[in-house]
Length: 374
Image (cartoon, rainbow, N blue to C red; front, side, top):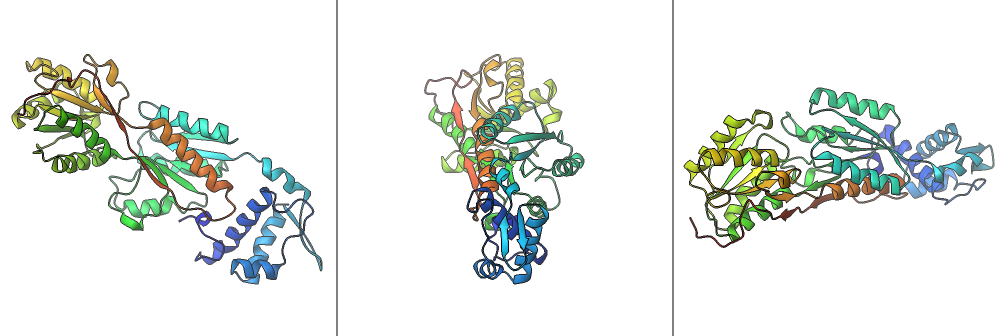
């Protein structure tokens, strides 16, 4: 939980309590609750209202005075300065950290840019290229640039303690909203704010679609380990059980290891498993499988129906791929709106943990006719 999530009197490390109160007062001034020249409540009144000690209240007011936002007059009280008039028009700066600026993320970034532009905020972008060692350096650079809040696509898989990493990112001193990330199996302990695709539900959309076409034995070809692949694999298992279907042993491979030979191996695996259809993460892998199926003498969709996951380039495959399409633009837009709402809030706001359900886009790789069960 970041300081902005707490009310001034809630449990907060002692060194931060005055900063939380100072930020609350600054935002109330920015929103026009006290005009320039207006007198703030007395220290005693602020102490009573916030539940904080007089010493903490004085430290908060001293910080606002150091920033030139208030003037303290001995024997008269604390008054809003003329400089505070510019607060309401101040431009928020949002730092964005992504692992890539290609494939999946351009649409996410477009949604973020649209929301920030509409809200009068600007963005500073940093890309760590899936290199975990660069991630902290990039975050430090964003903080050094003076960002007011962070939109993060952090590394939360393949590390020793994902929950501790999430807590660390939530304690950077500025509000943070995760995009397409949450701690696996964190349960109710996770106080991270995030907007993500419900990839388990996306897998269900694919399996249900194939089931409606008559497929009973459906395979999975999946990038693994992968932040998205983890959820797709879980969704596959849950969906097969929910729909009363018999799962096959998944074919798992790292994204960077795909090749023609790897695709041939995946198709051979599917043939041995006796499947008539497969969910494939992602589009490129789906296109590889089409070629491998042709080399194996299989016809798509007659002998092997495919549903890809991502819908980035599924439509330009040799046989256009039916695909699960995450709401990338909406993810970015909503995450930016949530962060700006928190940055401009004058009262504690709820923590948003939002999952958006993807849709399935039907093309040629599945066929449309009812099929006999296999």
